[in-house]
Amino acid sequence: MSLHRITLKNGADLDGFRRAVRWLMAEELAPQHILWSLDEAPSLFGDDDLHDAPPVSLPKSVARLIELCVCHSDPERFALLYQLAWRVLNGERDLLEIASDPLVHRIDMMARAVRRDLHKMYAFVRFRRMHGELERFAAWFEPDHFILEASATFFIDRFRSLDWTILTPIGSMRWDRHALTFGPSAQREDAPDEDSFEEGWRGYYESVFNPARVNPTAMRAEMPKKYWRNLPETASIPGLIQTASQRVDAMIEQEATMPTKRTPERAIEAMWDQEPKTLEELNAIIAKAGPLVPGATQAVFGEGPKHADIVFVGEQPGDQEDLQGRPFVGPAGKLFTKAMNEIGIDRSQVYLTNAVKHFKFEQRGHRRIHSKPTAGEVKHYRPWLMKELELVRPKLVVALGGTALLALTGKSTPISRSRGLAQFGPYRGYITVHPSYLLRLPDEATKREAYEAFLNDLRRIHDLAEADPDTGELPLAAE
Ligand code: URA
Image (spheres, helix red, strand yellow):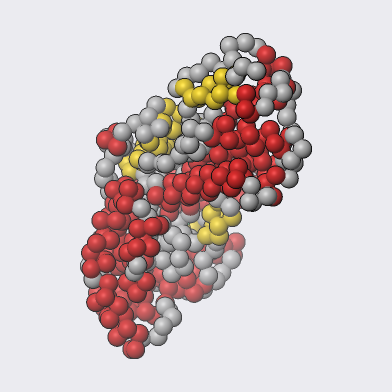
């Protein structure tokens, strides 16, 4: 019998492979009669026979293995996977359970390599702002296998509201917040090198680095050197390793005199010792202290003019805020910005901050689900919030929701009972709902009503900030 040549795309050509398997099975062509080759732009068969080929039914575990292994860079991958499919469909349905079978072993190793590569990509891709583009981000990554398509869902889930591009030597993909498109291969030079996030990443890494657990060999195995150039935090590694033993000594000395648990009091002490004089100094202290509950990417600081008239205090950064390092940029933030626009409050002229400066979440699969800060956590961050207000000196402080109210008053009071004018220590205050509350309401009519009430609050807030603090009178309208 002559050999049949099947040409597939040199990449993770899952569709091509599926169609080939159907056709080959229908023709009852055994693996030894097929010659598999790879091309950049193949025309698979050149006739329509394959469209008539009936589907084949493989066990889920085999189908999943095929999906993974087509991503492997081994040029023999399609031949091996066809052998697997052929044997499973010809009497060896439970073949995967025979771990000692050389084909099963080899395919299993391939799947592991692809999974490892995906894991590295999820962990080591770092987006940086593209030159001259405020809202577009790009990252460079060098995978060992053809994993670009397979990684897409993870990045879309995690960075859904960001316009991002991942550039690799085997292709690129862009998510523009609505659709995913694949493009040509790229070079490292095509990706931005450094941006303003860099300092934040480094500060975060330095604050979570534990000198007592330093193990350069394990670090290199987990984070191979080839990825180091993409990771801002790696600039800190040599210095941190060099000073690790001194830092361990210091830690041991400190342990003897300090309680081992990180209590809110310790955070307060850390700040009063340093007495920040500017928002920058305060933010550096917060960044250095790191998250109270591990997991956050970075501290999210307040944003806005240094002496804004209005400070809005939210709860804590969400998933998007954590990734972008800015407050109120996720879904609730977008709704809040829209509402401010409707009332004529210029977002860039107010100061936006949070009671808690780090994102706390529960990991569910690929998703990070917001988890409400406890009263203890709010108390931990409270001195920083108070210092922030002292440095901004606003005319009006607005509590958005219960957590902000707790942080500003030290008391847990339902918003429904306290909504409206308030006094927060020396600051004139206003209490309203958190914009995420509006997103959670079950039906459209209730949502619209609650949104209107929120707009009314923003109108009053706008007027209060314009009013004379002594007489309460509004300035005369301009002619
Ligand atoms: N919710 C908050 O309270 N703050 C943010 O920054 C985003 C969502």
